[in-house]
Amino acid sequence: MMTNRLVLALGLAALTGCSAVKAHLTRPDYEQVDQQRVKRLVVVTQPLPDGKQALGELWSLFTRQYVNQNRDFLVKENLARPEPADSASIKALCTEGIEGVLWLEPQASSTRYGAAVATRARLLRCVDGEEVWSAEAAGDWHGHDPKFLQRKMQFVEQFGREVDLYVVPSLKLLQATLSTLPNPRLNDQDIEEKIELGE
Image (cartoon, rainbow, N blue to C red):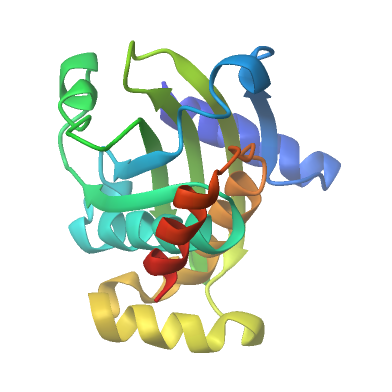
């Protein structure tokens, strides 16, 4: 099913030249309900993109770094798991101090010069498993881009050559997707904690 969505989304993108993000939605009651109580997150990429553990770990790590640097959430942990997720496995991520799960459901396949990538991303609150935010995105990019050279070299060194052509497409997709996340409202204690995460 996700493969069909990937093909359809890539086809639409090619025809329209539009953004990688096809749809995103934040709960209409976000400011009243979740903005002050879903701040501390765990990121999970599940199942693995193209069946590659290293690529799943790259997706989760980059997501953690991007959200901590560009959104007001406090991402505490990042994981990558091969098996398809269900409500029980997602709920199990809600350990003490975690208020939400940022779940990436990826699709990826190598192309001649890069990779076609897609994701359904969801932010689920731990208290009841309800969806706070979601987005769907897809794109097909070249594996080399001078703007991403330094980050690519870091990730290839960390995760190995098998991620080489996937790095740039993955980063472009995830940046576009995660930029649609809402921002929680932080109090002074939260701000101090966030500063410590960046150190």
